[in-house]
Image (tube, rainbow, N blue to C red; front, side, top):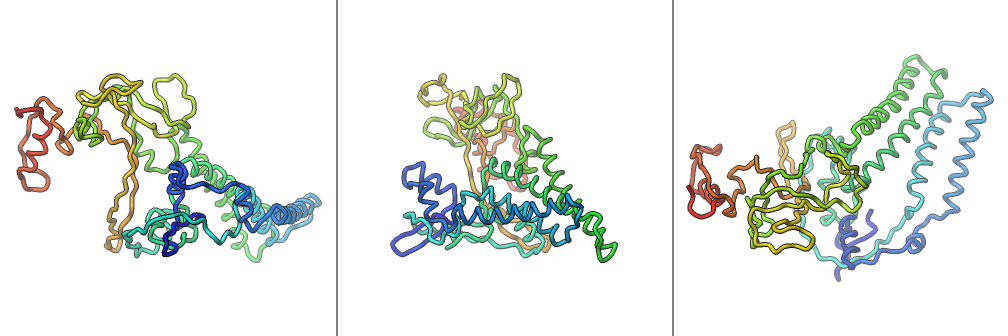
Length: 385
């Protein structure tokens, strides 16, 4: 992180996040360095890495040989052997990662005025967010001069999935190595029990998480919220869209139905089944509108438009257990459509309905005004009935 930094004539501005770098590369505004250029910048080489790995392997071989000869290992050696599992895993995953690069690649940029968020005063909430990486969502790199320590940003779902599949077995192996000292003598029986319980916990907790991920299968395991927000989108469902293109009557309340979709280019081949669980969000949902002035698009039927997902950022205020309000930044990605059976006067505009029946009742706000009627009536074609 921090390999690319925004600059202007006055000096450094802020580090660039991965999404910004990828966007600049796709737009042709940034040429990424080659593998040779990255290797030239790195302070590490194959020789230094190879020596470190040989030292680690030699220690592991010695431990295995002593166990094979029924010779004991000290508790310190068992712990060191467990940490070699972590060392090997890190060397494998970071083999091509440049080491100790101190000078970032300069990218032309403009100053940005970012709004700061109020950190939580709840120490346990802060610790939990720090461990789980949730605090990264509140970090705007454009307001900083350097990337925070341990900052991971918002990685892609697939990146998180692959990282979990690698990290969880490594964590299980780390705990399993500690079980070598299961029957070793300790200073007290309590110390022995603590060692055993800790070793079992280190193995069992990642194993349970990994088993849960595997059983969830096609539902995905981004997080619990992804399951709660799971929505089945059948072909033929009636819906209305938001403001996609107001000049073409594709506006809030424009009604239609789903007639198909265009899958993500990385989506694996799917079987011919009635219900399909996608790995990625579709690139487009094809909607046939009841009325539109949009010209017919090549390859699509009349009145059919592609609707792509949108990502919006919003700030919400959360009350802590102490009663203080803290701000959190939430990013939401979804298609700008709503099922028609959820039709309300909210965002119902565009004169797309033949008639409406209005129930003039006291709104939840407690006060009825002309704007309540305006929003409902603005969805009618011609004179309301």
